[in-house]
Length: 194
Image 1 (spheres, helix red, strand yellow):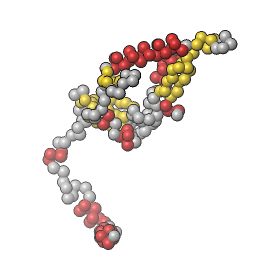
Image 2 (tube, rainbow, N blue to C red; image 1 turned 45 degrees about the vertical axis):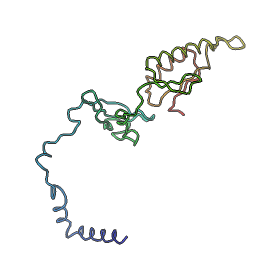
Image 3 (tube, helix red, strand yellow; image 1 turned 90 degrees about the vertical axis):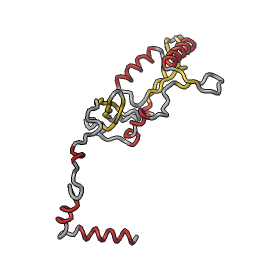
Image 4 (cartoon, rainbow, N blue to C red; image 1 turned 180 degrees about the vertical axis):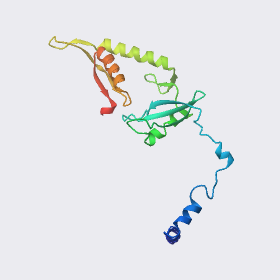
């Protein structure tokens, strides 16, 4: 505590009104660290990168992001200052979303565990998409009801449900809802409302 008080006292002495001009002149700006010749020619690492506007993948807020790409690789992600939602600000998760792309431990295959198996298998995305389509088709065919107990037409299935992601925009939600309603699904929800 005594060290802190001493430091604070010396700082207060330096910043007294009589010495403030001298303090600013000797400790602010290019003094005591003038810019070197090398520093004059430095450029930011994103100066020749392509900037692509995107949306943060985490929550329902939809903060804008600027993704900088060079040589086919993401080199930086920052907040988009033109975004009317976030104005360039990102939360800690959004600020760290660059790690989603560069993380060497990130899974890049579909993990599948067969029924009654104790082991996970790596499967390609095409296989997983075909599998999901087949299971949706089989479940709909097995559980579709054209009429209720009184003979009224209902044309639905309650055996399949959908929980959409919060970062889906209105157009995507519209298309998803049209698809699922056309299949007769009733249980349709979005994560942003939960």
